[in-house]
Image (cartoon, rainbow, N blue to C red; front, top):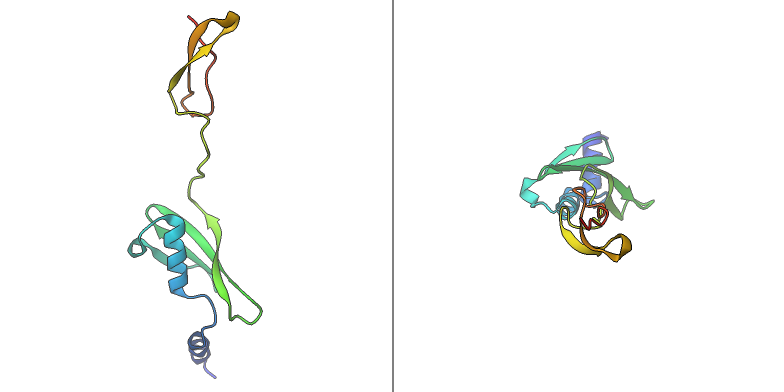
Amino acid sequence: MNKKLILAALLLLGCGATQQQLVDRAAYDLQCPKEQLQVHQIDNRTQGVRGCGQQVAYVESCDGQRTNCSWVLNADSRPSQKQSACVPNETKACLGPGACKGAQACRADGAGYTACDCG
């Protein structure tokens, strides 16, 4: 039997994760409107999705029967969103050496405050 015919029959039976599931998942993960997404096939089980200046890759994951399938995020190019310790360049009052009243500024990278300056 022709391979294309077999593939079409499998798609009609609902086997495998759908393109619509992929687009819905990527729109949610990327926080990007569906109409701005571009899907690229990487291999038989992997799809890449680009949109809103970001890109991710998904792998199709199915049960043994291939009746319950979904797309699983496999690679993510989005920048990590680490929590900052403080707001960059923000200053606050502090107590320095000898209990002097001073100020300290949040470092430019938001990783923490500079030493208390009583000067």
